[in-house]
Image (cartoon, rainbow, N blue to C red; front, side):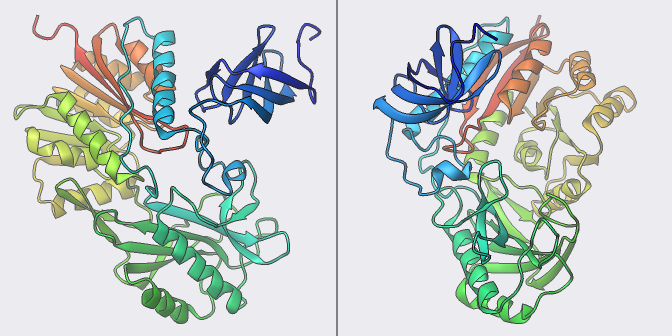
Length: 459
């Protein structure tokens, strides 16, 4: 430990050499790496060392001695405490560059093939893009009901002031409900002793239909003056199509319980994505940023170079969005997803859009994919995968290699696991394109599309 050149609680002046995967600045003191949130490559900063480990340390930015031209005045009052965004201190163009570089650096480290990541596809208007907002309720430090967002790494609620990534309507609705709770002395949830009624307000918005769903999550069966709140919300916010009471009386971090009771409307809203209509229910997953999702799907399908003879497997299909988008280009689509409710929604979405050439299967991809190819002998000519953050399991990778479809498109929400999986596939496939897409502007997250073609195809 003696050869570590920095000490906790000491101040240093450093040059920021690069930015890391989460947007943090990277500096070195005598070759020893220090990570500094909110610092930008090229800056000279005064920092305080807050944590020292054997291989690296963490610093806190005290003062910027020389600022980067990419630095901007932060537009959000709660930015430093919230943690919802990581990159509001830099220009939007720079965030896109940072994401591309982060993907490139993973590619360079792990792949034999020299692939160049494309420029990140950004949003024309990277504000108010999240179509689902989840606001916890609790007590502030003075014991008054508060509604907002949890402060980074804590369960302290930061009251909503103005958020630039949530829809404006969701913020207005949350404020209306909080006022009602205060005026009528309705209790809010206390995590420590699991008492109190109101736990969360969840608002889902149809980006293209402007339909709004409001979900009131409560710790119990009923709350006082239910009808009065419903009337108030419908009168004040004309786009509300449905209000749902969700019962969650478990001691859990999971936001929604299993039971939904419709207080107003049908219990779902609809939204359009491309030429298709999708039904969104309280528990169903839907793309958080439909504007970018549509671009992502179009790039993925275009890149798959599909034709009318193709049998397409859509693995981890969710509510069927990609498979439905691709259905008009191919002979047949098989979608596999483990979440039963998602498959129920997917079937309904296919029916609603009058799509006949698609089958949705509930099951673990590892087993269901295996069964389709090895027992039912259905062999895909193209595969699109959109796995969760942990990426693909080895059996699925083995099965992909076994059937070796001509085209494989990998959509990823975690470039680290994507690159790990591509390394296992690169003996069989040529990686022809890696395209980052900015689904969550001003956060560290980046979505990626990797396009693979079979090496022996056409030989």
